[in-house]
Length: 436
Ligand code: AMP
Ligand code: GLY
Image (tube, rainbow, N blue to C red; front, side, top):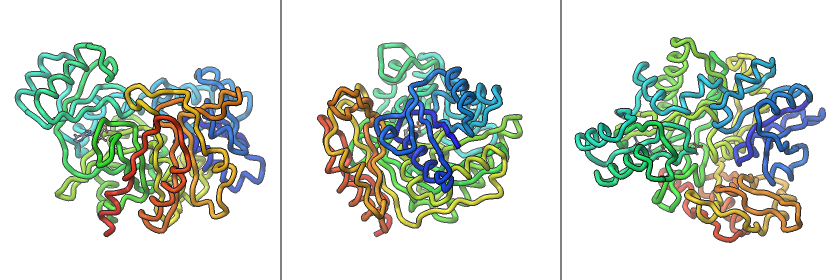
């Protein structure tokens, strides 16, 4: 059986690694990752494919009789990879381009939530700077300004002062060479206090299967300070999600979203990720939808998944997720991201990573950790593995408590070195606080 994972980050390393653990691996299971990274290249049973164009990927899947494809990142989804595979009669797990607008357009997502009464922060959308400035004068600060488009979690600024908010509006809408991309429009949104939770489900068009809960740390610096990133570390489960809150999220957010999509004649197949704020009054509001798994949430969630991911994805593609349940390791998984110098603004590439080979080849018998690669490359010139992207590695470990998982993850991470490495030392601190 041949499977294909699209993408080359830590999430895709985790997806491919977990697919490969299927009991079917005994019957010659092979997982291709396009393009993959230096870590996926090291895994037995995984092969990197240097392909990125959708037509080439369709052609490969057809020629090699790939049983199914799983899409990791948002960009190929927004580019219509699922539409192309389906048109070619190929099995693929991910939302169509239209369904993926829940992530690819903040304005679409906010309007969708408003139409269907899904709890979210109050907002207004703008495509010109002048009315946005007027609006800011009315609402004041703190306030959140978001670029309308895919920005890998980096097109969002929480402005603490009106001056900062005005400057961000200018940077996003009036050109000015900002790092926020050339936004076609922006969303200005009420600032929400609370604790963030990542709530990810698998959807098959009609049914949903919730995955284990998780939380990530989006800010670059310890104590959740500094600029937003794609995520500097994560853990699962999220202790803040009590069984009662879980039921509420399923009802008010997940089922409401599926019903809303159905009402509008859309159907959603794929991972659906609701980024939620648990507000001080115990309610939840949706910060954003992602039409994929989170990164680094995927790494910690998949470390805890005991069920066969191949079987789960097959049920999802066949529309029979109602017939299956997922089984989870009771332990906590915690992942620490090691990022390149200059991330997130301008990550430096080419730093040699030391301390890796021994770790990867000497996975402990109890298998309580895994080093997932993201921005890594092996140039094949004998230098070894070098940094090749913003987030370089995610060291994930299991433990009987958050603290133990944390200790284990940092024990491993501290053996790995590269020039300019940025690593937060406090991943999981909120959960440890709560468990006290
Ligand atoms: P988003 O990509 O929309 O999830 O935004 C990225 C990050 O910005 C979130 O994970 C939050 O940390 C923060 N953020 C976004 N929207 C809000 C909001 N309305 N209130 C407070 N923080 C927010
Ligand atoms: N870690 C947040 C994300 O994947 O969007």
